[in-house]
Length: 425
RNA sequence: GGAGAGGUGGCCGAGUGGUUUAAGGCAACAGUCUUGAAAACUGUCCUGGGGCCUGUCCCCAGCGCGAGUUCGAAUCUCGCCCUCUCCGCCA
Image 1 (cartoon, rainbow, N blue to C red):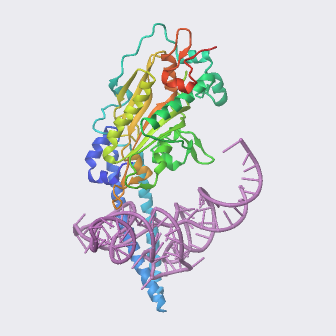
Image 2 (cartoon, rainbow, N blue to C red):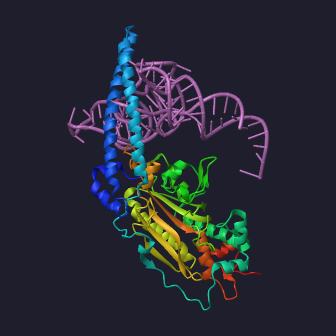
Image 3 (spheres, helix red, strand yellow):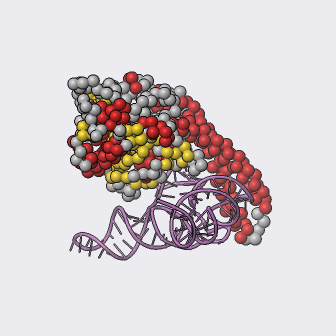
């Protein structure tokens, strides 16, 4: 959510920044609604002040056993006017809210121009894609042969887009989650949480997923709850509607949560293997910071995401995402991509975003610098640390051996009972 | 799921239709006192919105959430949510 006061005080700057994301024309409409709103507020508050004064008068007259009937009948009329104006104000307010909550965050100056992912700018690369001494296979062939992932039976259970990890595949998934959480808690200073998998509409709204992305989520209509599309949602909102005491920030939370996405509009895309699933595992990083520190925190979180892929020995690159590709709530976003030799593709495994005060304003997350200071909105950041399925793809395809077995990266071996290789026997 | 009790500022807690303009206390913050600290005393002390006379200013709203009754609602009515106790069911 953008600050209407900022739009009011500097409409040209907001228009310029929003137009980089294709929303420049919204500003004028917002300004006119804002004007209507303030006009109505003045009118209705005037009447309410009159009513309050009259109420006092009525109380006094009645106490002195006098006759207050003429004031009361006059106030009846005033009350009706108030009711009508209040209704009008509410409809303007709702319209303003609706328009405002639809707008994306303002992009930072350092975000490159562009309309889609093809305009993202590569800013770093760990090395060129390695060449294997044999023809690499795609992960679905290797995993099926090793009987560590059962695609057909996953679909039998929940439809396409759902998979069944088996044997050492299931254990490897578990190992990756534990390895990542341990790294973030012991080396990166995060506090571990394990959030609910379902979230309220208010929480979805707070992180910017509602109302715009309703169709992308699984909705449990009976209870009006949503399956989390990412742990970012519940973890960011842990302190929703709170004012954090001085000294609380920064807050660093990491957590695992299964992520659910309907992938509406992506039907038929990336249907093979693990690239795009309706349910996947992810370890998430979330920070709440003071406003002036959020861009430093963004760099820090990018480094932490990179630490994971480096520890696993993957080839990776970092993209500075363009204005047309950053998330709704983000003012700046980096993608980390890793190389999958079997697919011959870069795969996005982490998005690290600075959402500045966009989510904090929607979710009402504030802090005080001093015990008596005015509350200010925090800045929120989130980053995958990291997404599991594409990590699994890259792991299998990178460490595949000519005999069809897969080497286990050293950092994971303690989590795999000391095993060094996954083989079919 | 059933029955009962409850939800008031950071916390405790008073408040059953009109000086509640939310008492009182605790905590916090500033100051006085003190060699320093504590205690004591004095003051400050919720949030959001609007205004122009930009102020130690004025006004409006908020007592779980939402509707309603009324000239007027923390207080009365209805619906919902949450917490606690007991019962039922259950991993």
